[in-house]
Structures are given as structure tokens and as C-alpha cells.
Image 1 (cartoon, helix red, strand yellow):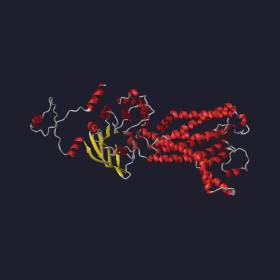
Image 2 (cartoon, rainbow over the protein chains, first blue to last red):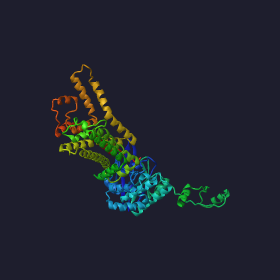
Image 3 (cartoon, each protein chain N blue to C red):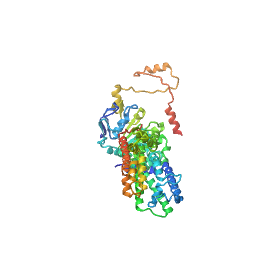
Image 4 (tube, chains in turn blue, purple):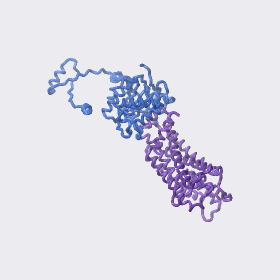
Length: 282
Length: 313
């Protein structure tokens, strides 16, 4: 499981004299879910495009399964699925026709493709709208269809660029679940770019943080946390009280040995809880 | 050519199934049929003006009453067909976001633009050939005679020239669809260029020729011919002019030359129709020019497309 399948070497891209991507050295091992983290405009998408061979690097190189992304782009694209940010489809074609087209572009024989499409559509939960034009799809449905496109070519590496942007919370959960599922069940290595920390924390085993084109940290979340923050986190204990919280009560707890800090926290309801509960019951 | 075939068939199916194709096709068919019908109804009035050697070709080049001839119709509306098939080829893929999806599949990037171009040409060919067959069928039933071999050859050349001509406008619109991100911008610019080359090129030719060689009552014949040749030089930039000359010469075998100067020379020739090979000689420069215009246009689109960055946003 220690095979490095994606590697970039001093990858650099310069647009109009600005270094959009600056000497990035990434390493992703087989089976990982790698979170590629960074603010908007930090060079995530450009890096991904260079990995796929869709943009030529100014210097440096990217290798996927040993294939050079620039010179052997076709071989790279054969084993890699890519879901672009704000993915779009042919709006006047149905979901089925869109998937068939993608399957044909991948040289999958029609017979095999039909079986695969049915399986994939079931997996992403679009079986009932197969014959609906994609133009009538909601954003969330389109994204799920995008997941279908990723799965249809049976990739070894799947790259998702902001897969959850503009999706409602329930849809986000579903998409993240799907990514974890396909990574585990089909042993697909995943590269997931996002600026939403919560999602990355939830599913990624390894992360890379990019800022202004530079990769500033790479590794597991705990390892980076230890290196960066250089202090051990104190354990937290949550105490719920039934009566009104009086200052004397707080003083009482503070006196217990080993307690570092006692803070009063108001118990606001979280919108997340309300939302999830509401739509579960629906 | 990985993926080219798949893209070609998909684009072709899109074109043939699209509403815009259906509408244009109905309009053109309807017009073509009414032109032929009008002519066949009043054929008696025009018999003295028609060349009896090439009865069949008459219906393509002759205009009856207030209706324009079929050639004029194609040279006028052909560009619009080409523009309709090209103006949103690339930028619509960009704006709906399907471009990065397709291009990240294991295909070469140029397959996309090649496939679209070839599918557009094929659609134009299918459209033209079906209209020509309709006209031929109508003629057969009206006149009750079959076309001779030479007429068929001439019709075939007319067919190829029309494809190249409409193909030029399509590749021009394709170019604009690559340069301009907005679909409406590329459509408007394409139509502006069409109007310029179809209507204004004549005026501009006149103005420039008169600027370089001013004419007045005392002008010599040399100055007249010089003025005329400058005018024709400028006008021959226009693909519409090239196409009109090609079709006139190929469908009207008695056409021997176009410019005033060569017409003067041609007056000494016998007024008999030219043979097929002679007609081809007359139109050869225009034909090559038209093909070159189309290919140059496509080559520029190709280069710009290959150098453009693929960003989904």
C-alpha cells in the first residue's frame, strides 16, 4: 500500500509573470484520500490541470502511475477521472445519453457500458431520472451525475475539484459518503480539492495545504497540527448542568486539581442540527 | 485520432436533431421548391432566354419573375447556415462546463475541434444534397427529360463549391466562438462580417479604386481598366463574390470571363457554351481561393484553440 502513484516534481506555472503554482512537490500514495486545501485562487485547480496534462507546466513535471502528464497525457487520462469544479453536461441530452457519450469517448464497448451505466446510476441515486434532460437537473443532481461520470471509466485515481461547492448540506453529506465508499470498495485513490475545512477533516487521511501557489504543509492532519502548532492539545471535558450556572459553582470546579480553564458556554442551537433533523424527517 | 469518430457522430446527431437545423432546412426546401415551381409554371415565357443545351442547369441559375435564382439564394443564405452551425461551437461548451469534462477524457484536444468542423461540413453536405435531389426530382417530373452527364458533373462541382463556401462561413464563426466567450458576441460579429462581405465590399471596392485612380470624363481607357482591376482585386477578397462567380460559370456554360478587361477580350470569341473543362479553367482561381480561405480560417481556429487554457471558470 506504499506505492506512490502521483508525484509532482518542482511543478511550476507562471501566468503573466505571476507564479500561480510555485515549485510544488506532492506525493500521493495508493488508496489515500488526499485533501488538497487552500483558499480560492491559491493554485489548486491549476495544479490539478497540470497533473492531468490539460495545462502545460512552465517548469517541473507531474507523474501519474509513472506516466509523464505532459508527454503521455492520454495514458494519464485513461487511468484518471476528473470532476471539474462547476461541472457541466450537454443540457439537451438526457443523463443516460451524456453517460453513454463519456463511455464512448473512453472506448468502452456499448454492451459493457450499458451495464456499467445502470450500476453507476444506481450508486449515485439517479436511476429514476435517467431519461430526463440534464438541463432540468438541479445543481446537486448534476454533481451526482458527475460522480457517475467519474466512476464509469473505472479509474485508479479520481480527482475532485471543489466537489461540494454550491450543494446543500444533505447533498454534501451524500457526496462525501460516496467518495469514501468508492475509495474503500473499489480501491480508488482520491485527490480532493476544497477550501471547506470541515469536509476535509471528515474524510481525508492525508492533506496538503497550498497558499499563494506554494505547498506549505503535507502529511496527516495530526502530524501537520503537531508541527505547526507545536503544543499538545489539552483534553476537553464537556459538562452539562441542569440549574442556572452560578459563579460559585464555576469556582468550585476550578479548584479541582488539574483543571486549566473553565469557560461558560451558552447552548445555542446549531443550524446544522435543525437542518439535518428537518430533512431527515421529511 | 482518438475520440474523433465519437465526437463527429455525436455532433452530427446533435446538428441533425436540432431545431435550428429543422427550421433552416424547411425554409430552404420550401424556397427551392417554390423557385423551381414558379419557373416550371411560366417556362413558356422564358424559353427564348434559356439555353436549350443545358435545360437542366437552367433551373439553378435562372430567376423567374420576382423570385431570385437558386444560386443567389444559396450565396445569400449559405453564410447564415454556416454561421448557425459554428457560432456557438466552442463557447457554449465552455459556458455550460462540458468542455473540461470532455477534454479530461482520454482523447486528444484537437479531436474536439476537428470533430465539430467535420460534423458541420457533413451536415451542410447532407442538407445540400437533399435539396439538390429534390430539385432534380422536380425537374424530371416537369420536363420529363434526364440530365446529361455533363450537367451532372456541373451540378456536382456546384455542390462541392457550395460546401466549401458554407464551410468557410462555418469556420469563421467557429473562430469567433473560440475567441469570444459570449455566444451573443460571436454571433453578432459573424453576422457583421457576413454583411460586410456580402453588401459593403462592392462600395468599398468602388471607393478605394476611385481614390487610387480617379476617373472623370477625360479618363483614358487605360485608367478605366486600371480602376476596374483594382475594384475587382478588392472584391475578390470576398468569398461571396468568389462563390457567385464560380456558380455562375459552372451552371451557365456560356460564361467566359468576369472582369471587364477579360470580357472585352472574350467578345472576340464565339458565343457558344464552354465545355466542362474550359469552365473549370475559368473558375479555377476562384475555387482555389475559396478553399484556401476556408482552410486558413480553420487553421487559425485550430491554433488558437490548442493554445487556449482550459479553465472551467
